[in-house]
Amino acid sequence: MSDYKAKVENVFSDLVSQKRIPHAVLIEGSDKELLNYAVMYLSMYAVCKESFRPCTVCNSCKKAMDNTHPDIYTPKLSGKTNIISVEAVRELIKDASIIPNESDTKVFILKDVDKCMAEISQNAFLKILEEPPQSTLFILTASNSKKLLSTILSRVQVFSLNTENIIDEQTSKLAKDIISGILSVSELELMYASAKLNSRPVFKETLNLVSEYLRQGLSCAVGCDNESETARLISKKLTKSRIIKLIELCSKATIRADRNVNMNLLCTWLCSELRRISWQR
Ligand SMILES: [Zn+2]
View 1 (cartoon, rainbow, N blue to C red):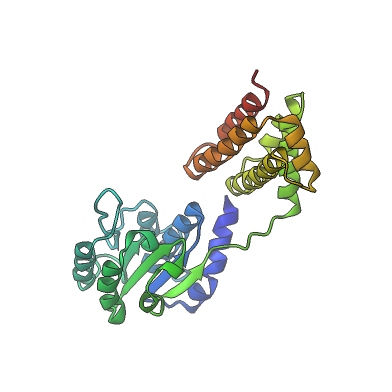
View 2: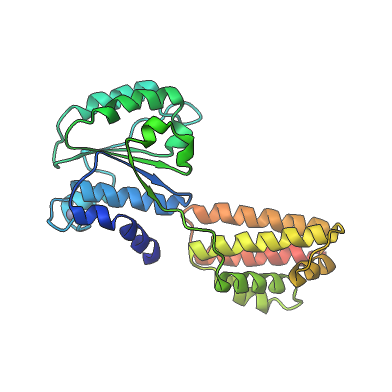
C-alpha cells in the first residue's frame, strides 16, 4: 500500500519543495488507484494550512480526503458517456472567479480528460488556462496525454505516473509458478503461488504475464513454433478451449482487482477458478 504513496510523493517532491502552487497540472497514468491518490495528494497540498504541506492530518487535509472540502470542485459529468460538456466548463469558469471559502486555493479536479472532454470542451477550457484566476489549481488526469490538444498541454505542468514495462525476475518467477500450479495434479502448488498475489500491483503484473504465457501456449497449440518451455507445456497439457477460458479469467480477475476488493478473497477466488477451468471434466 505505502508503495504507491511513496511513488506519488516522489513524483511531486520538486513541486512540494518549491512551496509553490501551480495553476494547472496534468497527471498522466494508467493505474486508477495511483492516479486517484495523486489527485488527492495534490488537493491536500493545495488546501493544507500547515507549513509542511500536505500534513495529511489537519482539518483541511481530512476534508480533502473525505471529499467534503468546500474549495475542491469536480465538474458534473453528463450523458451516458460521462462527458464534461461545454456548459460544465463554462460553469467551472464562472466558479473559478469566485474567491475560495476556507483555504487560500480553489481546486478543480477534471478526471480522464482524454476520454471525457471533446475538443469543443477542451477549447472552452483553454480560455481559463490562458488567463487563470489567482489562487486556483486545476488538476487534470489522463491515461494518454497525447490525445489532448497541444494548446492545453502547453499550459499545464505534466507529471507522469507511468512506469516502464519492465518485468522483474520476481514477477516472472511468480507467473511461472502460477502456470505450473495450473498444470500440476496437486492443488497445493497453485494455492501457494496465488497466495503471493495479495498486493494489487503484483497481482495485476503477474496475471498480465500469466496471460501472455497462456497466449504463447495457445499459439503453440495451433502449430506455431515457440521456443518457450512454458508455452510448450501449456499446449501439451491443456485443450485450446481451456487455454482461452483461462485467458478470459485473467482479464476478468484484473478488472476485479481494479475495484476496491479484498485482495485475499480475490486470490482465493482466482485460485479456485483457475483450478476449475483447468481440471473440470
Ligand atoms: Zn494539512
